Image (cartoon, rainbow, N blue to C red; front, side, top):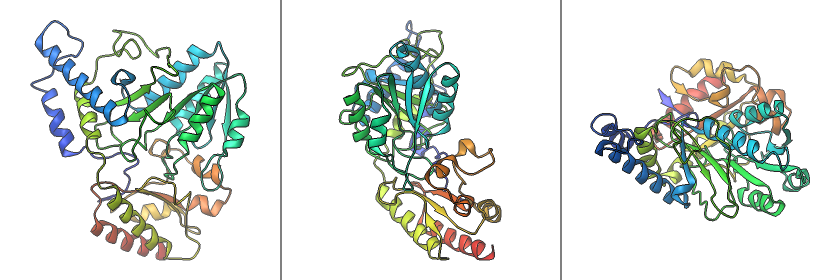
Length: 374
């Protein structure tokens, strides 16, 4: 199998597995056990991991909170901030192309009385900053825009969006699940107040994620989603996943890796597939996007039929892995354009650190044959 679905998940890097293994067996203590050496060892591992991740994200260690993954981080940030700050206002602004973990959370909050305003994108996948500014009112408490889109790879102008949020006096939450580990993210420079990320998107294990909450200028607080032992400074109760935390920390240390080489392979794949037939095109901005992603519209071909021809040999996707079981076109692409042939023919390829040139050559051969047959 040739794996070109790195946006769905990544394999655990061997270095990550090696770092985690002792914490399943010899160093299996609970980080909440403060009365003996096994607990202290686990505590120290968590402390070191938190400091390492904070160093990579250029923030304070106390601003990092560990969760079970990006979906929980998004829910904790969005619901937690809304539940604490809705006395000031009930309006939230988000983008129509956000991940379902964000959109569905806002849909839930609407049932609780929140007013959610959705900002659309242009055909390149970008937000109109003037329209975003006009949407902010005195009742707005939270602005929520992802760092980079999981389907197209389009990168939003996070600095300008954050500066706008500061100017208007609203908090800015950013789902950076697809950006962290692929792009340099400096929280000391970017005006982000809360940010979600995940281990399994950057060659770490599944079941572990993180949430950044700024401590000052502005200080961000939130209401916990659930209660228990008071772990993570009473923001996220529950026994800490020490092996996962250690693994995610090690995964952070892998960046930056061969991003330029990955981008070159992506560009070679993209150029070859576009050349097969006139009318094939890339969805989204090809200049301001993640280095490993391409979303291609094979106009005139049904993407499901293409996938069925090659899915025993190639792994790629029709959209987000979290919505793969749902029928119908991608909500991300529908937000960008209204073209049925383009929508039904669109697929996403996402490459990674283990993708090889020979795999790209074979992929081109397989897809050219399948597309010509279809």
